[in-house]
Every structure is written in structure tokens, then in C-alpha cells.
Image 1 (spheres, rainbow, N blue to C red):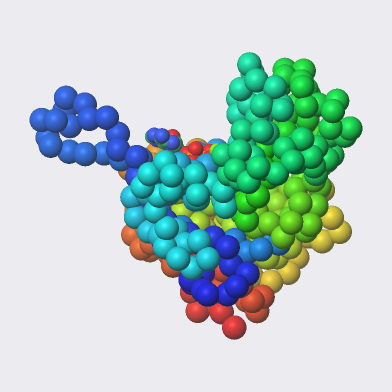
Image 2: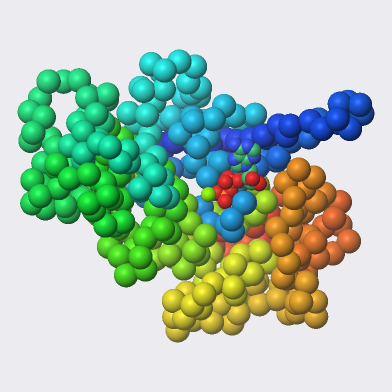
Amino acid sequence: MTSTKDATVVLEAVGLTKHFPVRRTLRDLVRRTHHAVHAVDDVHLTLKRGRVVALVGESGSGKSTVARLLAQLYPRTGGDIRLHGESTRVRSGRQFRGYAGRVQMIFQDPFASLNPVHTIRYHLTRALRIHHNDGGDLEAALRELLTRVSLTPPERYLDKFPHELSGGQRQRVAIARALGARPEALLADEPVSMLDVSIRLGVLNLLRDLKERLDLAILYITHDIASARYFADETLVMYAGRMVEGGDSETVTQTPAHPYTRLLIDSAPDPDRLTGDVDPLSNGVSSRVFRRGSAQADRGNGEPPSLIRPPSGCRFHPRCPAAMPRCSTDLPVPLEIGDVPGHWAACWLYEGTAG
Ligand SMILES: Nc1ncnc2c1ncn2[C@@H]1O[C@H](COP(=O)(O)OP(=O)(O)O)[C@@H](O)[C@H]1O
Ligand code: SF4
Ligand SMILES: [Mg+2]
């Protein structure tokens, strides 16, 4: 979680924070109060070449805001964004274009992200021209981009409009457009969640192939923790604007430590996809935690909290089956879990359990 000069590190968030101001009501004006949505607080993450980090959490937990901050589409309230170890903050359109040439975003809805009045050729040409005005063979570059995302033969797609393609094909065009910038990092915000279940795997496999062939650093945002296990090397879990657990994907999904991660896994639509032959309750610290919490397991349901007045202490405490008195007052710090290197959870249950 610390900043590093490691050559494989492409992009880092260090204490990244975003509070959206809320429009003031008459009562706020009279009382001189200001409110803000605490969408993202003190987020740390590191994207490395040739690796996928999954950011998992339910709707409203702040995942898209993290991606947009990293893409510098929003100014940040606090913290830092480092590209190859250098602090970066874009202040002009020119700086933004330079940054976007290295860090590209893929959005959830490929239809909304492609302009319906323009052809695929137009979208890809624009991406190539904005970022690389190098006067090379444009036609060859267009064909290569479409081939990279398996839309072949390319001439079948180049002069089509977005509405003439399927959802999966549109998302492949959006990925090709992002690749047109020749980025080092891709921020993929729920890239398959609007696609038909039957074609999701194909698009994830494409991203994995690109990661390997182009050595891309990928942030994969999802509310589906099962897909994180399948696709990501590392998984980070976010709840109500804060990171609550992280580690390698296998460990986080098979032996989750934080009560919220457990809740996410338990409420995943198809638990068989996650657990395979292994029962995540059967070993290690997590089973201890859940025996402790099981008496109040019914408190594990409920709604995510308001981010205008987030709960004090641990933001998960109103829903946590294992909550203790200090949880409502003290903000948990990230604590190492057991003996798996790099596995941590921000939960007081693990105080004094490391090693
Ligand atoms: N532009 C914005 N202005 C005000 N609040 C916002 C804005 N964007 C997101 N939010 C709020 O920030 C919180 C996190 O949203 P978001 O990052 O979209 O979560 P997720 O992607 O995990 O669903 C939500 O409460 C959302 O309503
Ligand atoms: S710190 Fe307390 S309330 Fe928060 S997840 Fe851990 S046990 Fe539950
Ligand atoms: Mg989102």
C-alpha cells in the first residue's frame, strides 16, 4: 500500500479522496452548514504492468468515482495520483490529452460511450489522431486495432454505425478505441455488466489477452466478486467509500476476512462459481470471525449507509454481524491477516491476530 519506485508500477492512488458538495438548502444557508457526499475516502491502490486489480463493491460504494479520479475526469478533494512514481494533476486540455494517452477508461455502457451518428472508422481514427499524430499508415492502424479485439475481418466493421453492432461488439470497439491511445493503464468500469451473460467471458478473456500481450496495467471494476476471482490477480473490496479488504484474488475470495466481503460472497447469485471444491468457511481466521458473528447474523442484511453522513467508526458497523462497541467509534486501520503475505482487512476483529 505504499508508494514505490518499482519499475513495474504504472499508476498509484495514495490516500485518494473525493467529497462531492451537496447543494445547500435554505436551512443549510441559515445554519451555515455545508454537506458533502463522502464518495471516496483515503483510497490506496497500485496498478502494475501486466496485472489486473479488481475493485469490488456494491452499487454506490464509490468504485466509479475511484476510476474517474484516476482518469482525472474529476478534480480530487485530497490525496495523490502518481504515474510512474511522479505526482500528477492535469490542469489543461493539453495536459489531459497527454495523460489520457497513457491512462484510458472503458465505460460500462458501450452504447452511451460511442456516438451513434459516427462510424467505427470515425471513432478509431479520432483516437489514433488525438494521441498519435505520427502520419503513419492510418488504414493499417485501423485494421490492426480491430484485429486486436477480434473484430475480423476488419473491413466488415469499419464502416458500420454503433447501432449495427451487438453489445459485445460495441464494447470491443470501445476497447479498440482505448487501445488506439496506446495506453499503459486501462481503467475498466464494469466493462461486462451490461452485456449478455453468454458473451461476458469472451470480453474478459479479450482483456486478459491484451493484458498479457501488451503488458497493460488493468483496473477491473465490478460488483461481481466471482468474476474478480476469475479475472484479477489482486482484489480490493470497497464499502461506502473506503477500502475494507485486499489481497491476492484467490485468498480474498476463498478465505475472505472482512465481514462485508463475506456478505458479498454470501449474496453472490451463484455461490458454486466462487467456492468450487473449497468451503471458504472451513479454514483460517474467517471461520473464527463468523462463528463469533453468527449469533447476530441477521444484522448482516440491510442497506448501504448514506454517504452524506457516513456512520462513525467502521462504516459497516450498522450492518455488521460481528460488530463490537468500539466499532461505532474507532475507524479501523488495515491489519494483516494470518500468514498470507499482502492479505489485509480494515476490521478490529484482526487486531493482534497477525503472524
Ligand atoms: N457527480 C456526482 N455528484 C454527487 N454525488 C455523486 C457524483 N458521482 C457519484 N456520486 C455519489 O458518490 C457515491 C459513489 O458513487 P459511485 O462512485 O458511482 O459508486 P459505484 O460506482 O460504486 O456504484 C454515491 O453515493 C453517488 O451518489
Ligand atoms: S470493525 Fe467491527 S463493525 Fe467493522 S467489520 Fe470489523 S467487526 Fe464489523
Ligand atoms: Mg459505478
